[in-house]
Image (cartoon, rainbow, N blue to C red; front, top):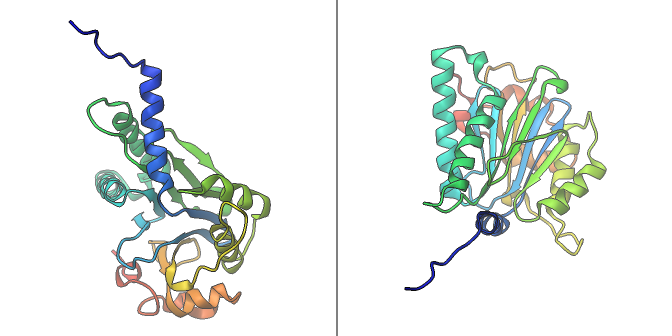
Length: 255
């Protein structure tokens, strides 16, 4: 009778963590930054249909790096949780912290289960407050832990180097154009430190804008507005005419 193959629990968890990290590293990085009027999400994404950033609820946004089908399942689950909680109790009871706890339980259960592979995803859940002090940003790695971030956070393939770059240069009170420029500079740096150009059409950009008069604070930035911001200009009066000008129809509608 042959001796059963034995792997220690510590080694099994280490192997699962390494598997998940390698899967996440194959994806493109993304960054989430606080700026004066809210929170901006920036990532390199050539697809116009498969989004890395999405609205979860009124003031809450979602960002993910890794395998699209896995983080899309998590996004849909988060939307259902938020809708049910807001309908059952109150819209104010839907918070980024509550959503992060739900995601942490899901990711942690999957990671520790021997019956399925760990999710190859890393998430960011952000909520914009009435003031910058009220902003919340949570990073959730593949193992279901929760990291409370401030100022800036990067996830994905080259996250450590990008995070270091952002930590040195990000400051409070930046304008949207300044924050966007910094994010693109961070994403354009490769492992050797040299920079490459990322054209506007390959960028996915969204914001949680606390100054937006609508209840829903999430909106996408595309087209001429994005090019104007990348050139260093402001948005001017464009915020008042979001619908139909470089913004998805569902982002401009109200519930």
